[in-house]
Image (cartoon, rainbow, N blue to C red):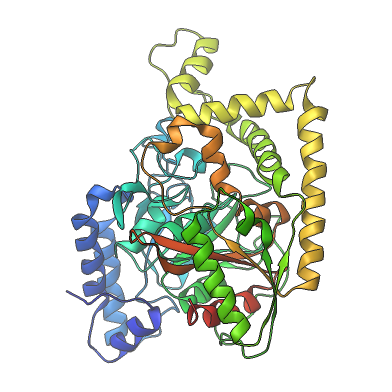
Amino acid sequence: MAKSYTSLTAIQADLTAGLVTVKELVETCLSRAKQYAHLNALNEVYAEEALQKAAVLDERLASQQPAGRLAGMVISLKDNICYKDHRVSAASKILKNFISIYSSTIAERLLAEDAIIIGRANCDEFAMGASSESSYYGPVKNMADESRVAGGSSGGSAVSVQAGMCHAAIGTDTGGSVRQPASFCGLIGLKPTYGSISRYGVIAYASSFDQPGIIANSIADAALLMEVLSGADTYDSTLSQRAVPAYTRHLEPTASQKKIGYLKEAFDSVATDPEVKQAMAAYLEKLRAAGHTVEPVTFKYLDYIVPAYYILAMAEASSNLARYDGVHYGYRSAQAENLMETYKKSRSEGFGKEVKRRIMLGTFILSAGYYDAYYAKAQKIRRLIKEETGQLLQQYDFLVLPTAPEPAFKLNNAKKDPVAAYMADIYTVQASLAGVPAVSLPAGTNSAGLPLGIQLIAAPFEEQQLLNFSKYSLSLL
């Protein structure tokens, strides 16, 4: 049984020294997956396949054949990322037992660098949620406190890393779905600039927001995965055509003085947990002591962020989920007796409550009488948010704000008040609306032992500076 590792650098050093084998690494992850199966992090474990790939990789390493940059890394894929000949369901009954006929660009790039995919991670149904409770497979539980949520929608991805079932995970971040679970589970969660990582083979929720992201234990692992996964893809026309920087080669804690703006409203708001404020204040004080310029900033559109995001995201969800109709593929109601009943009953029985709520709201928003009042207006607000964020990032190197207004909340809380649950995204959706990169960094724990997170936002395609400053920040947090 291999020891627990928190970085691929340490894994590969021990592989080279003959202190561990890839098979032992996989066996350790499988053992942890079995031990913590009750956390419900993985919807499916590819045990036999992972062990077979590990044996092949061990043979190559033993004969000193070249191996990929991710050799030795065990990864989980969120259950909305396609992997050929494997089930992918977006944690929904409507796609139960659906087997993908092709691999996402993400899966192909991971496999090309010899990563081992250990399973598909549980999530909110169709990635719609901030608690990973709306899954058809049941809620994900937080290892730090099993009575609490893991965050969402990539809650299973976060817990799979938190519990040592894998070394890193690939999730998706639409409005904070990588960063918030990372915060709740004490991990690093990176959402890149929109258009950095291919969405080909990722089941769509809100296409103008969806962005694959990385959950890891170390900045070095996040940087390497960013390097492997980024870059142009002929199957995704929304991708940037920029050359992919050598993030790992230039990864070093920043030595220069930076100008930091922190969100004043986060301190003033009664909705922000006092211990979250305390953790943020302590971090900012350390930055000041180190000679960085730290100033409060006011974001005048903060009150419009969540409404604008949900109007646009629900509208896009309504459009994207129209394809699940009980005819083409996926779940089909056995009670239907004609075409119209097939549509109605398949969708009514196949989708969960939260997904149906968002489809209906999105359809209403896009309807002829309300399009201008809601969707068009929200698009204008989005432009203003993007412009205001851009102006702030011209004045400051980074913006600092909490990842979430509170630590992980109790299971079943979100069901009581959906609007209150949507407000859990208040500090993460700004980066999503603006399309800029953001990272959640672990900031210790509160008095109850629950992990806290601090979020850094950078200008578009400034991931290198964001990663470098994050590595530096971890020494202060």
